[in-house]
Image 1 (tube, rainbow, N blue to C red):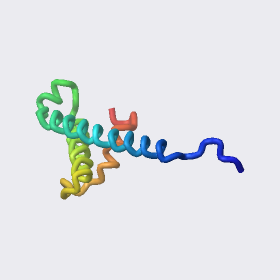
Image 2 (image 1 turned 135 degrees about the vertical axis):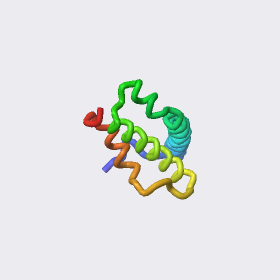
Image 3 (image 1 turned 60 degrees about the horizontal axis):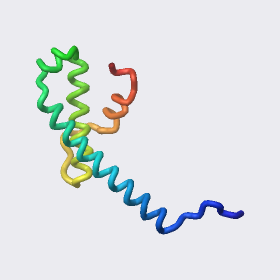
Image 4 (image 1 turned 90 degrees about the vertical axis):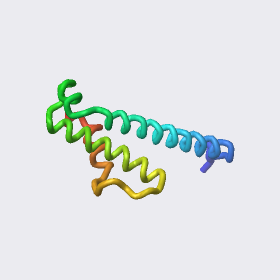
Length: 96
């Protein structure tokens, strides 16, 4: 079978570089957003219209972001929850 789209070193290098850049930018964004969420008090979130259950989910999401940063930096994870579970919950339209 003829491969009409062969992989080349140039293609692979570009993909490796792009994904590495994307991961690095994402982790930095998670860190900034996690810090921002930490700055919001329960009263702030209540004023924005979040109830107790939603505030707990937001707190869990902040820890999930922290956990993913910790994995990236190869440091001990905060807490024992699975960050992918919380992220999937927020990605679903069921929570809010």
